[in-house]
Image (cartoon, rainbow, N blue to C red):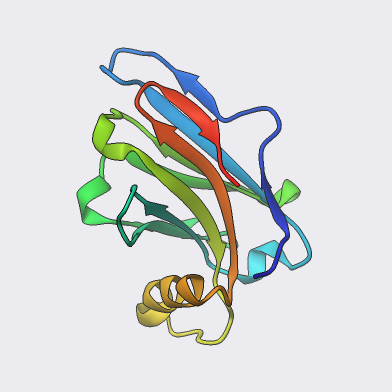
Amino acid sequence: MHRGAVGSGAGPVWHRGEEAWGTVKISCKTSRFTFTDYYMYWVQQAPGKGLVWVGEIIPEDDTTNYAETLKGRVSITTDNSISTVYLQLSRLSPADTAVYYCARHSGQDAIHSRARTLGIRNYAKGESYVYSVIEVKNSKCQKGH
């Protein structure tokens, strides 16, 4: 598995707001590849469960796609100047307890309709750029691996 990204030193930040469980924003700073050339994904893995695609962004033009089950609660953004991708998840509940990973598309298949499946498949094999970033658990955030 390639290494080239880290969770932010300044966060993740937990905000207790109007929502019962607040909002979390996670950052993933990448390196060693041209950030705008690849789709970036967020994937979650709940305890004892498999990988679930959260969403993706094309850094070049900020096009995003999100899992239907999370629409309205999830936002993926980038700061291309520092090769960083962000995941913001709002209205958190215990069901959001998971390890969240950022992943870079492997570049093996440029066909968009297959990109998310390929990204997760490669993640499972440890063949792609994938990084454990954060565990969201109950009302606190813990750093991942």
